Image 1 (cartoon, rainbow, N blue to C red):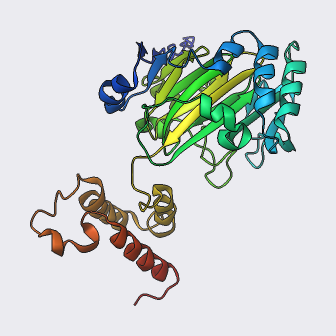
Image 2: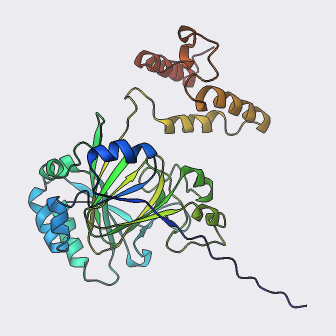
Image 3: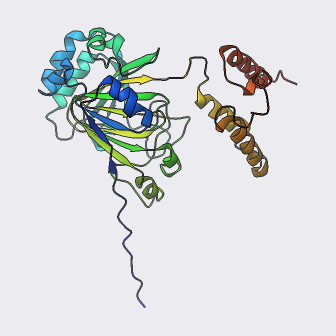
Length: 351
């Protein structure tokens, strides 16, 4: 009998991110953000001067931004045309397919406008530029007043040509506003992380571990579990003036679709400043738990579930608050005591 080659089923189609129109600050805070799901806020920044200039094309946007530039140096990424704009690893995962260079924003704008007519230009990109430093006047005039209630908000500028950033996560909540060009966001809940094949956590393009899967052309032979992730995938395509809300720890890849693209985003956290960075805890767990014998590791998992991952105070109801010590509600004094305890432990000073 002749064997029959079965064609694998088509991968699931991503679902569109829910879009909201005529969003006010009150509606965002009351109805949208509490859902803790990605959301498109259509036209929420349509009146921004940068958005109005961006709709007129690359030269108009550059002309809007140039006089606002403070002159502070920036870092840009550059990659050859063969990368197709995908800023990622080299094949051996021991380096990157782009170079970093110190430059000035005006020079970057000149290069982007010069490359705009090219069919296969170098990829050129600068991200996470602190907008109050780079362009203070733009930072003041390009805001979403009333949408974010937090003491510390990081406002950043992202600018480049047709570049692609791999799927990753951020630890803060995010409102990202497209100012010029169009952008496509590909999103996954954190429950999909095992099916996204993260790269090394100690060698990353920009800080957070990134997926090795090329979402524009996934290799299902190499990354078969990615089909399962696609079943929960959402996609958002944004125009100038649109914003997307990303709750903390939602995985997302970003693709710029036009010759010149710009985005301003706002990162914030609602937890107090004395909370420790959870990623440090993850690193500590790699040092202390990950390589234990399986039976012992599962016992630690049960203890973590009880004391860390259950709702606050659940499992401790038998203790009065004063007797809960380090396991009670976190306060500034308790946070400092825990840090001191951890430092002493890492230094081998505890019995």
